[in-house]
Length: 181
Length: 306
Image 1 (cartoon, rainbow over the protein chains, first blue to last red):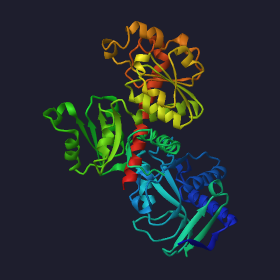
Image 2: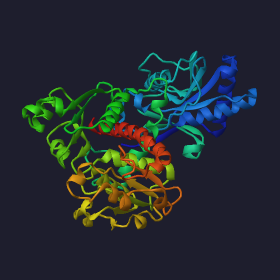
Image 3: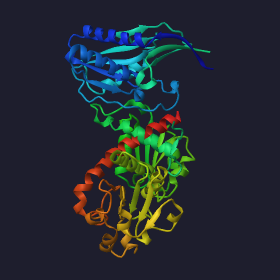
Image 4: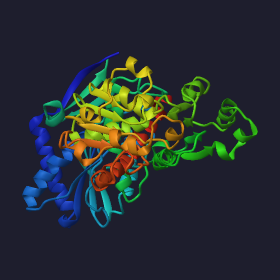
């Protein structure tokens, strides 16, 4: 059984506008810019966090600390998604204590990745607050988790897949919905 | 993708497997630097260190690796056990297995002991050294250290020097570095080399100067104390003269050559103590790399078992 392309949700232009809007919302919603740090969840959350950093840095003339976090070792659904996902880099080389962490992921779905990322973050210190940014919220939560900043809400069925593509990994910026054949 | 349930030796692995383990180990290096030096990956799993032969370093390294992954760890050592009452190693294993053990880490003085036990258990098995056969995680951490320092693992000249005939570290390194496309040289007195190495992918020389010339990697092995009483070497002094690494011999190697030793070092026997300052940091680095490599191995095996 394969997947077929159902709809283009964000093209390159929309993709960039959405990121700029989220950056503005973060600055508006978190007035203490000096406390902000961005942490991207592997894999594509890392690229999105980097883009947000560039926008916020240039708007506010700051240098926001940027980190990456891999949640493989914290997941509770490994057997559900197949054996042995490879561990990727976690790199947070600044203290989290007292920081307002902006956690960045591409898609919010069941909420299990966000839960794992929160657990992982707590092993690095005690942030003052953690806020969640997602490019797409596709619904179907299995845990009591919500995002603070959302690029686009897309109601989906479980027969569908939301694919966020980024230039650095996939060669283009776009969001597409695929449907099971 | 990792599919194996056991890690018994490097002979049967291929380049891809080794690259995967070393690549994953890279990401485990960061965990001991966190405020909370632990991840929940093996939470609810039980790891038993089944050590039928004395060991401090390897046992501690495996114990810490399992604990950093949140596994429950039991240390078994044969000197304080029913083995003393005549229980067989298989019975010991089966008794442990009744506690729903997920991973056995096995050290034994007989070659292929871990293979024997792996064929008879449902749990995963990691060979932590079996007789003169293999000690795969030691060789993996050696390779990891080399990759870290030289940024590559292929096309290197690797020299293994010393007490080779009885060395599982030497055998695992021969297989590991050969799989990665390195040229492996052995250098030792004939009495410590044995005859079976001509069948392995190695070059042999009795001249340390020649062996070390242009070498990228030099692995010095520990000379076991009993070798002298076994009349395998005439004297420590003569051994040192012909097979001891000193600053003069080292000049022939490449300037960035990585010098390693599985420890503990007999200073002024296999390595001149004047090299201590130069070599010690690299030996301690091997230890912290060993932890990362063992965490990666436990993680991969547990994933394959599910």
